[in-house]
Image 1 (cartoon, rainbow, N blue to C red):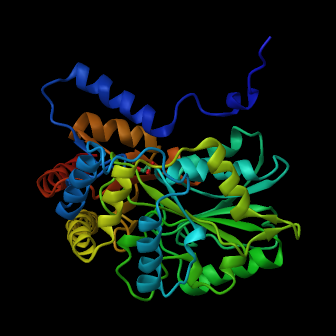
Image 2: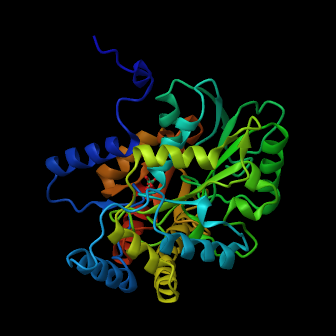
Image 3: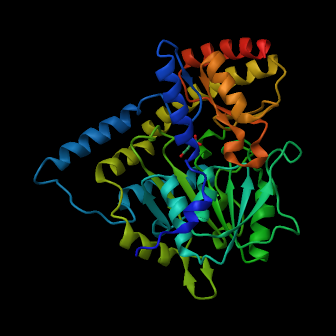
Amino acid sequence: MAKINSNYNKLKTNYLFSDIARKISEYKLAFPEKEIIRMGIGDVTLPLVQPVVDALVKASTEMGNKATFRGYGDEQGYAFLQEVIKEYYEENCKVRLSTNEIFISDGAKSDIANFTELFSNDNTIIIPDPVYPVYLDSNLMFGRKILFINGNEENGFLPLPDKNTKGDIVYLCSPNNPTGAVYNYAELQTWVEFALNNNMIIFFDSAYEAFVSDKGLPRSIYEIEGANKCAVEFCSLSKTAGFTGTRCGYTIVPEDIIIDDNYSLNKMWLRRQTTKFNGTSYIVQRGAEAVFSKEGIAACKENIKYYMNNAKIIAKTLEESNVWFTGGINSPYIWLKCGMDSWEFFDLLLKKAQIVGTPGSGFGKCGEGFFRLTSFNTRENTVEAMRRFKEFLREL
Ligand code: MLT
């Protein structure tokens, strides 16, 4: 008889955002006349920028033409895209990569979850709490031991290692999902030194790097000396360029990471990808290439500016209502103190103001009492949501 992976019993019944989607559907069914404003899952609302659309159209046309049609591409991505990502790193962060270290993916989520396959199930995984639920769930699926490190108001939701931080792999996300907090250079240096001194690997999720406007903050872990020996970086175009539905990301696996004097993570990941992944589509990779063109970068920056103005509107409302919050400056997420059970707050906010957010406890036990709003909706909806939110708080 087939034996199932009983580690799945350790997971919550549903993935966080599936639970929220179900609650929205139920509410819509009961109150079809109510206008819901979604500030829950970080899904973008602005369309793809014109240089990307042009590149997608051109690549689609090529695929319909006998002379320019392409079949399978390299699993790790086309050189044309690896090259422009390499340049992006050099220009933005003064980080030099080799194209062999850049693996094109269909988004950060799948690579973050799949990369753990390269490691034995005996490893202890260090996970900051609160955090993007994929880190925890994908390791629970393998039955791995988890050590949580607590984020809270005192440490600004940016935990640092101490003598009790004993594990083999640590996940860091900066700018952070869900709190919007950003590690500075000194803090990341502390993590890198700790990893090097304790033979640990860092999985660094930089999906929100494009939202960092403060020049004094790092956008890539490779800006920190020594990180090329201990850190793998996962990035995505979902939020940078509105690719949530188009799907493209990239993972940096430095050639300098050698484990047990023998195992190259880079070679292992290549082996894994060539076996289990057939690459991101040619058309999408051409679209992604256009994100990194001069025009593409400028247009994406405009979109990010639009979202960050929404974040300002949310922040202003919270300040005026005397609500404690973090994020919203170098990040599209705003993490506010709701002061009650966060699912209860979710239900009340939906029922009374028809606003959807994300309950903090969905990101871990330290998220209890907090709530996440995103700035990815339209300007009109954000303004309307904040009008309703103020009224909601007054009546609470
Ligand atoms: C979020 O809302 O946390 C993200 O959009 C989820 C994701 O990127 O998968």
